[in-house]
Amino acid sequence: MKRIVDVNIPLGPIHPCFKEPIRLKCEAKGERITGAEVELGYMKKGIERIMKGRPWQEVMFLAERVCGICSVIHNMVFIEAMEQISDISVPPRAAYLRVIANELDRMQSHMLANFSYCYTIEHETLGMYLLDLREQVMDELERLTGARVTCAYIIPGGVRCDIPKKEAEALLTTLDRMEADLRRYAGMFEGGPMIALRSRGVGILTLAAAERAHVVGPTARASGIAVDCRTNHPTYQKLGFLPITRPDCDNFARVMLRFDELFQSIGIIRKCLKELPKGIVRGGGVCKAGEIRYSGEAPRGELTYFIRSDEFGRIVEIQIQTPSIMNIEACCHEMIIGSDSIADVTSTFVSADPCVACTER
Amino acid sequence: MTTYLFEQDLITQKYRILVAMRHDSLVRKIARELDIPVQELRRYLIEHLDMIQLENLPARAEMADDHADLGDAIARALGREKYTIYLRILSGAAMDAIVNEVNTRVHAGTPVDDAVAYGRTQVREALKL
Image (cartoon, rainbow over all chains, first blue to last red; front, side, top):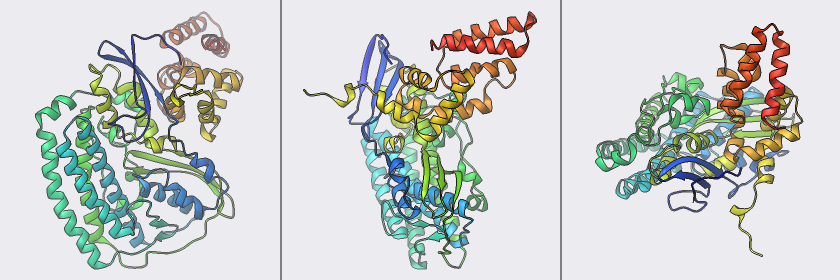
């Protein structure tokens, strides 16, 4: 797309504030941003192509390699989609353990997102506090699943291993400590005058624009849209899950909403451990032929898998719609347009928690 | 000669996005609606939208199907909001002119189907296909 503009300022593909390579070509009139164009293709994996024709046993490992930050939810959505196709039921204890793994994954992802934002607005102290806390969550994920990243914990008909009572108690103790630390950090962010200057009223994403772009996850909920796939998930329904929203639509709201969801995730894990049913964690089952569209709530929002499998459980056709596709699109074509300063582009972009690995797949 | 990836044209990468399962079915659906060749529409999309807009086309189209022009049958048939504010492949001013012209024809006694068919030819013209 060729256009004549006042000033064209490229950000990326390599930028100190971006976790992954992406190129934003910002069009500016003075300091005001009038448009932006996104160039992808710096880390394309072609993972959907690799998945085609392979048995589900291989695809489940490939699915969680779409993204290193939210690998658990990719594993969970793919396996739950195959379970739906094949009428495989999950033991109640395994369903609760899946929720615990998913919420721990959400916690570490939200902490990384908020770290990135704090780092971008030059509040490195708070950023490092959050990164330290994230390491503790990763340790807890390892305690539950046996691995920090790409855990392959969720399998058809259950989960790979149970959590011993002693480990569950240790997890609860860590959660208590983390909650106290998080309250302090959330307070630091909420009350920081310099943070407010860089965040309040910046990167506005109106409710109408968010709906048009099909924005999902914390980015949508910070614009007042109460959309969350967990409300449709049977285990979350048993736990009485309700989505959190904020009406402010700015960078501050998006980061604060992630803090709110961290406390919510701690509450969900506590409730799961308290109500954890007794019984087996691996029911087994055989994957069959079928076609499905299945969504789950990733840390960044609605993650959808479109799958067609054959009678041997091989994946014939697959497409993954990751939340970052919608969120990055809205960020670059709605949120940063009209920014009063080019310095706000990076912070606004990071506030949407963009994952380029997910977007490019 | 040294070339840089970020200075290369993105036509092949954009084409790969458009031939994915859901994108392909959406492009074929729009091509059927507007009665234009699929390859022509792909070329237009590649020239006018950036990579992330192409990636997000199916999600935006779903939102358009659910929410666009719910109260106005003619505007919905022509895809006023769908093609302007949701998919962003046509300017609002051009589409408003087409919808006004179609409404004028309907008020003048032209059957609605004929007026909408005329409107679609105008949409094709506006897309310069």
